[in-house]
Length: 171
Image: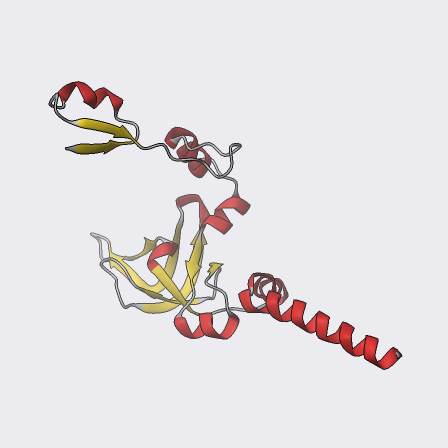
C-alpha cells in the first residue's frame, strides 16, 4: 500500500510496517509569498480598507461576463446583486452598504426581525452573491477596460493592423 502525505510526518509511527510512505513536495510559485496559515489569516483580518475592497469582489452574472469579458469586480454600493448561496438564496436587491470591517454587504430586502419586531439588515459575504447590474462610473469603466481579457489581444492586433496600414500608406 502506498500513502501520500504532504506535512503529516508524525503519522508515520501509526502506520503498519508494510506501508510504503511517499512524501509529496509541492513547490511554491513565488518564494516571497508565505504559505503559512497564521500569516495569511493575520493579513486577512488586519487588512486596510483598500485591500478589503479588493478582497470583497463578487463574480459577475453570465450576461455581464459575456458583455465585458471580466469575471469578477469589487462590489460597491448601488450594484444590483442576486444571492446564490445560503438561507437568502435567490433574493435580489440593490447593495445598500458595503461593510468592509465585517467583510459583508447589506442588500435591500434581505432583512430579519429582531425580538422587538424591528427589521435589521443581514450581512452577506460578497462571494455568495452575483452582480447582475453594475453601477458604472469613470473609475469602474477603467477597471473593466483594464481587466478585459479579450481587449488585450484585440489591442495588440489592432495596433499591429494600424502599424501595417501606416507602413503601406508611406510607401
